[in-house]
Image (cartoon, rainbow, N blue to C red; front, side, top):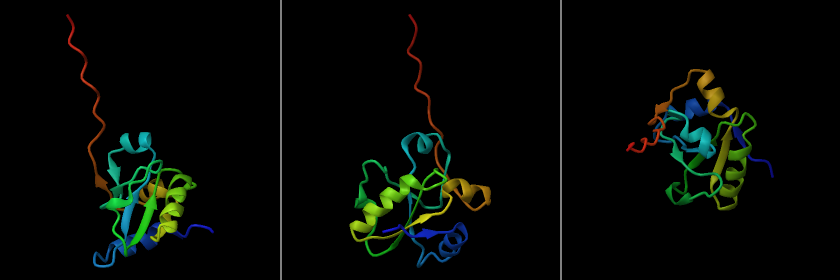
Length: 120
């Protein structure tokens, strides 16, 4: 069964109504997530390879996104969530299309380099 898709315009419109806005799930792989300083507004981080769904509220629409232009990573996560009873769709074009359209994002901390060991 194909996973439903949502366009960036449809998602933006839904986010403009906080009382019915969907839960946004950031399903980027570890490297793209950790090396980015932005996420979609209010997004919850869920590792697509080991999803912990305890932080995703039941009974609300869920929209998952990633950084893959074909949405392959979040499609697998969405399919698993659908099997668990969630109403899920995937953001067409992911975060890249969202940012290209200059739609709102939240910032997150930049990756920190490990401190060098003291010499001597």
